[in-house]
Amino acid sequence: MEVVAHRGASADIAEHTLGAYLEALEVGADAVECDVRLSADGHLVCVHDRDLRRTAGAPGKVSTMELSDLAELDFASWKKPWSDLDDEAPDLDPALGGVLTLRNLLATVAEYHRPVELAIETKHPTRYGGLVEKRLVETLREFGWAGKESPVRVMSFSHTALLRMQRLAPDLRLVQLVEKAHHWPMLRPIVPRDWIIGPGIKQLNLHPGLGEHLVREQRRMHVWTVNTEKNLRYCQELGVEAVISDKPGTMLRLLGRK
Image (cartoon, rainbow, N blue to C red):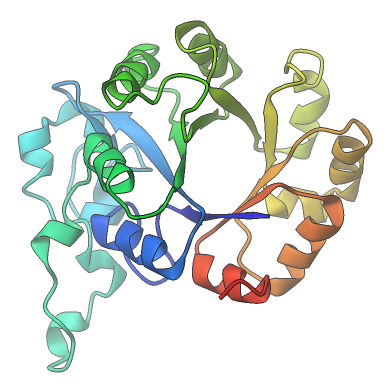
């Protein structure tokens, strides 16, 4: 079973920062996961929310700000708001806690000393629509990662976005994320058999029939966000291929790999 670091090692270090991803690589994560949004000047940045209040403590939306403006913000301090009062707390490195571009994350993974996969989620709805996928494919091609041998798979809750990805880069692996169990009957007839299905662990627990149905249909599953031993064991029983976790080190230890 593959262990995927959800927004990096985000249980311990602020999500989507370079520090969180370096920690995930250090503990041995098989893959890292990120969300991408477009800045106003066309850069893909790793940020989950549309606005910046939660992770940067600032007003405004990612889509209305240029990369230079985003680079002025602190994306790390919110995780440990009292650290400045702790004399023993290490100083935060701005390079590890600023806005992270997708290109920087890809370069970090490409230069790492062992193979690491990436699960990239395109966020929708967005004011830029299909430009997000277009920019993503352009960036992946720069790294030679838009073909069959790519370590990248693309995920989205938007079926339309994944169809767009299929047209732009037909050899990439795709993951149809499923937000609610009752969405699956509508998605089932239109999701190709070779796509991976990505249900959330909460929905699998609330609606066991969803997992049982996916198993019967021999659908490949990547499940988010798995942070406890109980949920990890349940995923093992279902034959899940990958678990996406805020605690990649813990999951690896529970699997006997650390």
